[in-house]
Image (cartoon, rainbow, N blue to C red; front, side, top):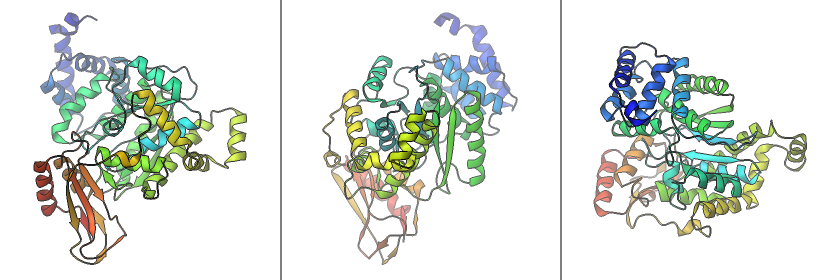
Length: 432
């Protein structure tokens, strides 16, 4: 369809009628949803009308059929990848928990185990940074379709921004209109994740679904509903999926912000003594589950090799990390994407403007407010300023004496540091 036909009054009227229909709570068919996605993808709807459509799903959500139609239409109105492989692995977190950058650890582990894992990652929407923002610290993430094929052929994996060459373009436009509200509906999260998995050719997927009072999904009940919807979409698109629910009260790592989170991940890959062990264990768990999915469709010889040499896929993932093969694989991915493969975790320096937050009494850390942590990190300049963010010197359950540093604020600009300090005073991150 050419651009003139795309913007024809008749087509626009059909799209507007479909949006009106959804706004009053009625269900849409595939033709209506495809028309909306096509109009958004071709930039013929505009931000205001796109926002109306995004808002239409907040209150009542979408039926399972509509979720399927939305996902299918997002995929079909954009570019697609095909790796011609029986097993194409992927993992994704629904987000909302800053400082939990598992992808930069899981991808090289799985790729080093011999499986294809082309990772389409997002930029920050409601959090201080996204995986693409972090990977961009050490390598380009805006890769062409041809470049992605080349990187994956050389290394088995990649970590790229999903919007770099037209994968599910309607999704990225909807994300942009949602950003001012710092809010995504659960159904929109589902569709966004699954559309990009399908467009990237993924067919063995692990979803990390954290829930808790201060993250995106607040209750176990809601988490189970979302899990069921992920499993429904996976069946419809013939994808093997495992959705892992985890109650979350704090970040798994200690750094929040692009440079700090990337440094955490590299410290794990390099097995540095000061690496964040909670983040390491979470990454091994996710990698183990993903390898388990992949192994279920592998040859009997591969299955026997893993059983004989490692026992199970979790031990396999741990061994690949501990023996340095995961870091070697990450170096290969960084180089193939155009970055400096000789990077060391300690080369990554956060912003030069620093403020140490100290404990005002002796005690044990009882609570970390993820909501306040997110806001402070963004006020400090993340994700646009790569060196901005917060380092958690103390986490839940750790002892803090009076005047011990409990967290450190970093910024690249004096103004942002002042704003972060001001908000932190009113809405503290750590409670002792």
